[in-house]
Length: 214
Length: 137
Image (cartoon, rainbow over all chains, first blue to last red; front, side):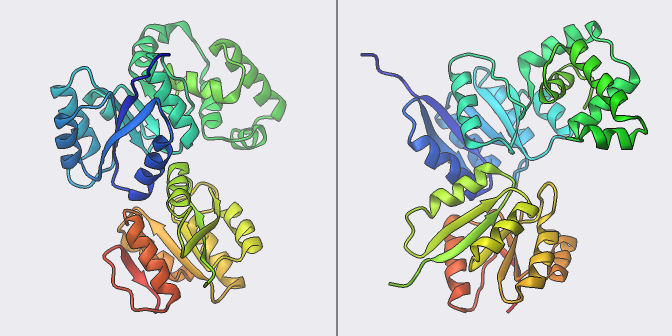
């Protein structure tokens, strides 16, 4: 019988309701252990440096020092620490800011508890998690720079992809850019082919990873 | 034994919904009777479940919390409808008042303070909390 050493997680977020959700969930897991939590950046940095976890989830929007500053400080002191930015915002500026500060990934807070647990597990197992809520991953970022020139999509396809990312239906896209639904469908089919994907969600993820859309 | 206070929560963050549901799972006074992740779904579920208190996130996809409250307020003049928000923002507070919200609560409130607030509101006690930016009394 083998004994699993739990993967140690630390959470910095100023919402007690959110912290409670993660705490209650991880309490029941044997392979994941929430070793600590903090409500602001100062407390977060202090506690993490005292007793470093395997992975730190850092809310971007914190009172006091911002999450991005916290990520920068932690990256500086603990080069091996896995750091995931947690955020309500999908704006490019935040994503780039967090990644440049040294985050390993940028995860949207709209993620479900189960998906977050799966995500943490995959990290614990050294895999590269894939999730529609993951807007950036350090590895994906590097790949995207290499792959960027492989994909050529037309300005119209780019426009359609952008509207797909906004969650619009074929009808809404058609109305918005004054095309027939059939033409929109053809554009989407071509986008799927070029990006080598099978669903709208995948198209959006790959589109973002390859920086075709924001 | 008194019945538990029936609370409904609308918030688009699953982690928040899970946190609140789990925190009150075994509570003797408060019970989360339902949750929703957008305003439309919230209205539909609230009409069916008839809660004592509604906690409504201001910032949701689809129908916002404030819009949902103004719709509910027309049918339920007496229902306690609280806005929950991350933002300490005058415009949001004014919009909430106009919509007919019973109060405006900051989302960084602790579970304990929120529990006390819910109980005190039902008991019609005087509320003083740094997390409550507006309260119709």
